[in-house]
Length: 442
Image 1 (cartoon, helix red, strand yellow):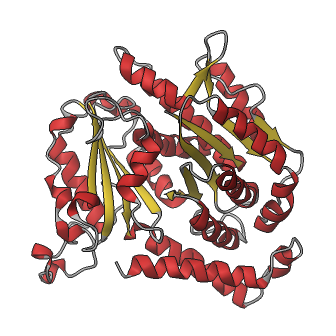
Image 2 (cartoon, one colour):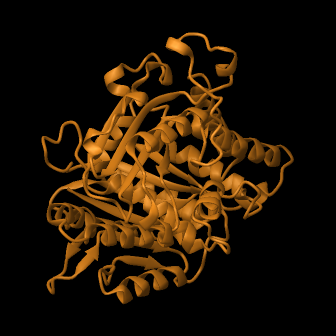
Image 3 (cartoon, helix red, strand yellow):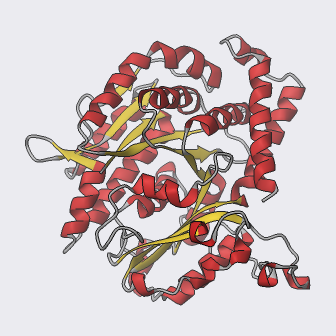
């Protein structure tokens, strides 16, 4: 089954191109015939000349980033974007969610829908739609939200998974928190799940784990792509009967999203290291999984700096003195292991009932996928997709900062002039306060 990717705005298009490049490089290693075929079917289609073409639609209100993405893909000589699979204009959204959602999105709705429909019709079977966007800007957030709404109307029975890049906490755009609140509140009703990457976390990975001195957007996109592809590449699931899973998005959602009030998914991937160090690494499954489990419990974003004093309550009851510090409670977790002896790794530590809310049965709280194929140059790697309290603090910070601006009436007129009412703002705050409350009381 195939995944149609919709790349929205500057962030979505840059990250999307990196994702396709990573997927292709990983799949086309030596001796990976079945893995390669399954990956290619998922991400690409073949043109009459036999070349691989990404199953993607590129959307931006400015042409520069799309032109760069198309050119870089073509120059790689390995895959390319479709000749007519992009839409752009010569006027941006001005970092204004309302302009993108109420003006530019409806104005170009038909053209974008036609592009997506064409890609969907190329699929023998559609696994779902993967929309990639930033929450902080104009095109990615405003137009992206509107496009997601159109996709939900076009394909009401299909899975829609949104990948969201959250802005730096210190600020990139003065109104980024407004844009984020408006985006998240609408998407929460439209999407089946939201996979989140925080720029602050990705930047730390580049700096502290990858040892990159002058971190570029490309470096950060490479980390995000590595983590996303580690989830979406072929893997064996408990129900796949010895064959690679055919529907990655459907399996992901069935494993992780059991309640419509809990749709926020975070990613943790281990290890991350410079390419020059890969040949000298000697990781073991017990070591990797021990660190990954503690990252989950302590809500640590990296394997460095883990607070090992944070632990789960003993026997699902009250904690000891050292364990009384708040731990990250989960609704469900999906562990994906890739590499030598992945299927035989001991994952029992992630099955501890004390990690999870009591209202999800044990068989629905934890799942494992695996593949014996080493991933993206790493002999062994583990990825944890978690529906937990891990995004509670950054979400609360975004809502708090946006509310403080709204209470002081800052920049409200810049949004109302495009048709967004103050009541729309209040409804967005209400929606996200309910999401925060739902996760806070797990």
